[in-house]
Length: 442
Image 1 (tube, helix red, strand yellow):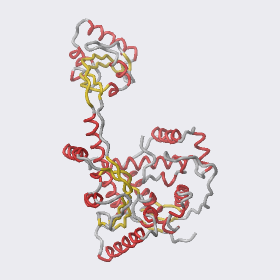
Image 2 (tube, helix red, strand yellow):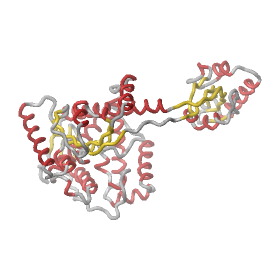
Image 3 (cartoon, one colour):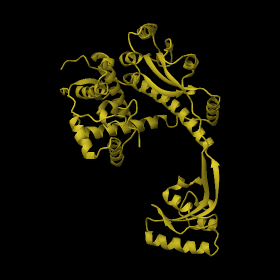
Image 4 (tube, one colour):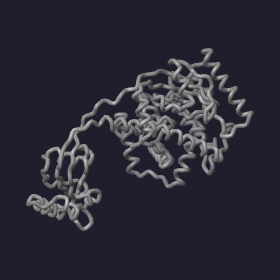
């Protein structure tokens, strides 16, 4: 199930705050709704963004900043920031459609039910809340569908482009073992095109220097400056980048951050996307993976599949006959090679290798723990057929090393994936035809 509260999620623009997983409370009263004026505020290739769509997205942003409205930028700046997000959303959805990316009704139903459950609501209660917040259930479902499509799009873009080598994992773990903090960062970006002109460089440098001066002189909080001036996709989140280990920070910034104290802001730094200011919000020591003792099992499996011309009764009769042969002395491996319908293990004589009890599903888990080494189970049923298990052995292993390597792999992949997709979005935006019409009257 995809996470419906991603930082750059279009749901963060469309959904009432109460329906996001991190929302602290449900709206007690319906929020005032802007008048719907369906004029075009942007043309995006062959698509359009409507004024009503922009109004709804801005309304939700303002609801999220209830009580902190002073942190929001002027209306014209907010218009541009929110509209730019919507433009990127439209571009991603269009590319996804061209790529054949779809969301089944079953996937959508699961996601909608998950949102309701996270907010401790029934579907009926959620529909009532949506109505109170000025959104129809059909609009909500479309927003959820779009969110899942975009996440699938992200996965398709980074798939095959992001690889993590064992050497990179070794280096990551070595760095962790050497000690060092995790850092909570925020940033402000003044974006530059891929090949900026001298004039563009000068303008961007002047802007980032001006922002730094405002922050240094205490005229504006860093988060407020990010909301108002940053070109980053997370500007409306105050530029918050969350917690990262130092190896997850671009090398150009690492050495600078190591010398900083919590609350300090860097001088402007030129990066791949433009000029940036980084704020070190706070630091903490990285945790270490504790020892994890787990029991693993070695077993063989024999399955008779149900389906096609084989009924459940016929499969049960066959598995009973096979068990009788095994109890009478037939070799399990030989029998599995000849009779098992489990293509993943039959060629190996049913050998499942070493695994944790839950690795092969609940049906196997419930049986393997009851057997003794060398014992053949009674026939049992799964959702695909009837099975026999023979337990060959057990062992207790320390899974902390495996868990540590997997955590390192995910951290590296997450960093590379974000960089890769950010690059993809910049290219997608640069190649698109976008006509902004915010100044139109209507």
